Image 1 (cartoon, rainbow, N blue to C red):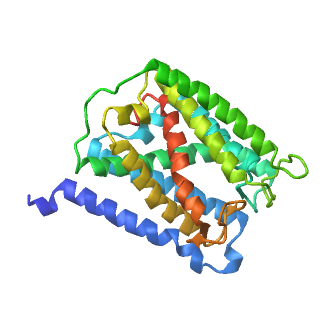
Image 2: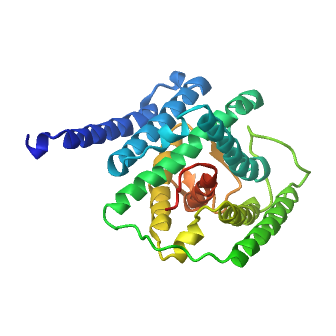
Image 3: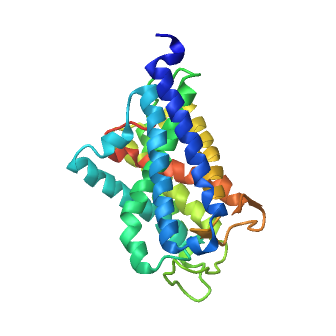
Length: 304
């Protein structure tokens, strides 16, 4: 059997063809008739978009590293419960801070009932999309750079201080977000709300959450991004940034066709790339940082 006809080569050809087909399908709504674009069809489209992204990224990792996070997170009832808990927590940390408090985006077509109904499954899918995209990029990066096996330098005082600082920053950020409302806080997911400098206060809160998660990872005996950096291993950081760059452009350009969510209250909001404020693209690594830091709740080491 010639190498060109080997099962491994054919499998890669099939995967590349699947990615090309997916990229084409992702932009089809741009040419769909207006009557076909409804909240129901957009919801179905984004369900397809998310699940296909997960499967295709998972296939890259499976072929390069012979591991599947998707299979691990859905292996049994206990894994599903853990997955649901991570989805709920990631939703609280992202939408809870950035949307409920910061009003940095809103969902124009979702009423509160549907939003609540889809919250956990939606963030289960979104968490694994973010993580799978990072793992796929990291698997490719590792083909060109061998991962370091040096043990990280763990200073317990540093991580305890990080936890305390994180708690203080989170509390301060939430207070500042609540103080940003001209007429007092109101829960709103469907319309724009004008706030005073919410992104700065969101960034403070997000930094605090990340530092607390660094402490949680250390306390649970798991590796974290700072641990890998202390070991001289920058591959996780570069993989995070590269995955964020690639997928931010992909997701935002798809959303720009028919806005499933709309951004508000961002700095330099009129300066856009692919229909999203430039600051949104620059801030994408924040969610990767927080979502990957929740990996200590899974059996898998995501940073190593």
